[in-house]
Image (tube, rainbow, N blue to C red; front, top):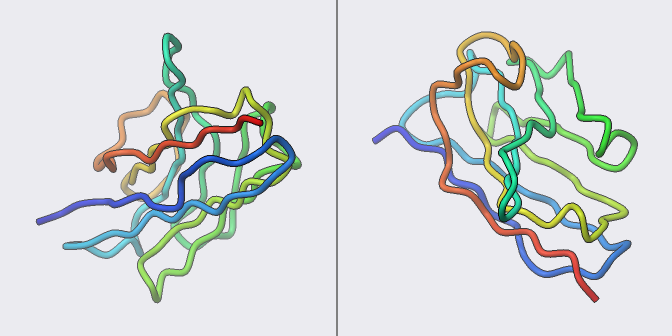
Length: 123
């Protein structure tokens, strides 16, 4: 079964850090760009970050630039999102998604999606 599984979410105080993981099973991520998205209650899903299939290119939404870092370990078939200096407005369900060959835009169709992991930033 082809799937992506996110982990690492939780409750953290403002200013804290979390590292999300996105692990693939049933297929290799070697040929896929990986994007992170989030959706807060009552809001549309937004793109957060994307990393190219070999990790040489990354991009970030303005709202997270300088605070979040995306990386990947293809040997472990896993992509990470390191989130620092978290703010209450970062609270959302975070999803990873795989797109064949390149990131495209955040509105491009992605091939596989994870089930999401909740991140809550609150004191």
